[in-house]
Image (cartoon, rainbow, N blue to C red):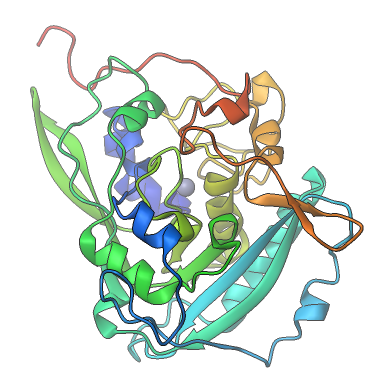
Length: 350
Ligand SMILES: [Zn+2]
């Protein structure tokens, strides 16, 4: 769910060797599902949490028609919106409007070979509560994956959960409309911290937290624990380097729409994840492989509830929604999932 190869090599490689990659991939969840999906929202209204909604306006210096000139009728399509706060601190320079557009254009190119289109709805700007410029994404997990099951099954049993502050931030920032739960929302935050458990020594775990360049809040980590209208959220905090501009947005979209962690071909997500070739591992790869040998990435993409095809009346015909909140083995994927064992985090003779 993070997109930076270098960063990951430095920061994540140790936990990966200890088989804690799963926790990097976990994201938060929340318990406010029913509130969010049943109450009407508008910008003047507070929600059941009394979180005031931010006010947004579309950046009209962008020619969206030209940006979306690649879109063809009849092909599977995902809708993407971007929230770019106007009151970022002056010293925050990691993300610019130009870098966002570059990343969106790259995502269109990267997904083009699959036949799936990335439709940019808008990029909006507006002032947000400065408390939400920095968030801790998820609560500190209480139970590490001890290796008796793989990370996807672990996440299904113990979903990541949003912090209350993060949940309020999403409610403050993301506008709720009919198709919100089918829309991908990139939100620019200055900092998104991601706490995780990693083995310290022996049979002891410690909590670390990492500053993320992008966090996808994927359903395999947060099955049913993000309020439904906000489940398409993806944070962006760093598009500075050229490789980030090229790959980050596409990679984070991949976590959401393929609903997989960092994995590629015979590389399970609990193993080494730095490799050439695939969009979903760290490196410069952009491939979205297919079939079982490709861990069904293409097939899972095409089944994503975030995809639709326009019918002859211009109505969106959406893919079926998740049946079990979108965990990795959700029935919508039928047989397009991989079973694999967990990896013990500590020595077997403990
Ligand atoms: Zn990632």
